[in-house]
Amino acid sequence: MSDQPMEKKRRLTLLLIIVVLQVLFLGGIATSYYAVGWFGTEIKIKTVPVDPRDFLYGDYVTLGYEISTLNPQLWRESANKPSQGEAVYVLLKPSANGLYEATGIYRNKPSTQAGEAVLKGTVDYSWDDLLRIEYGLERYYVPEGTGKELEREARNMIVRVKIAPWGQARINGLEEVTPS
Image (cartoon, rainbow, N blue to C red; front, side, top):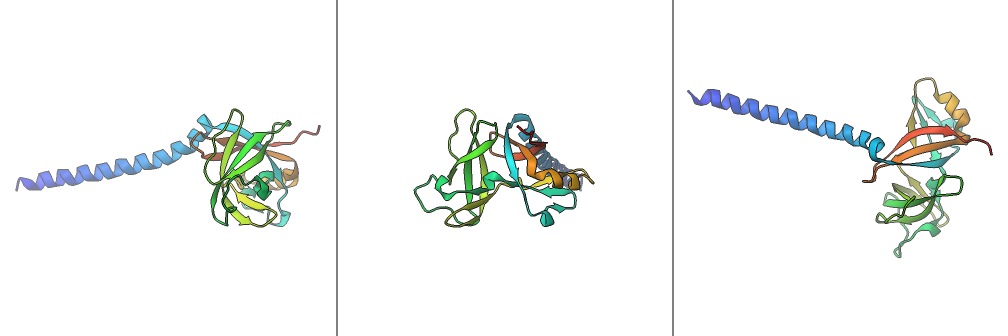
């Protein structure tokens, strides 16, 4: 009979351990998102227009990037170019205007020099004359009611992206292109 209180105590301890592990797991997910903002390097990427009929879905805007449609000549591997669904790494370097441009596409994450950045993406489709790559940055959630204004301005927008040292990326904001 003395085993019953001990068994109850073990069950409560096990339940407490399970709850703590779940809280730690969820906290880790949230922390990893915010850590990109704390430790990430900011780059700027030029957007390109997306078909206006499909541009706005609810409270997010669909974005397209100049670095999403790339010339297959940027493929830096000796093997065949990547196929649909394959993960790739795109090496980015800043141009004279401060916007980052693609300079190479790799199967494995390349080493970088000062000022360079690497975005991980997935090949959406691959043709002879272009590679279409998605980065997971194609949706930008906006405050309710502001999407229509962004839809009109999307042709002249630059996206600020933060890339953490471990490769995770997130949109940090939008800014209008200033006429030169």
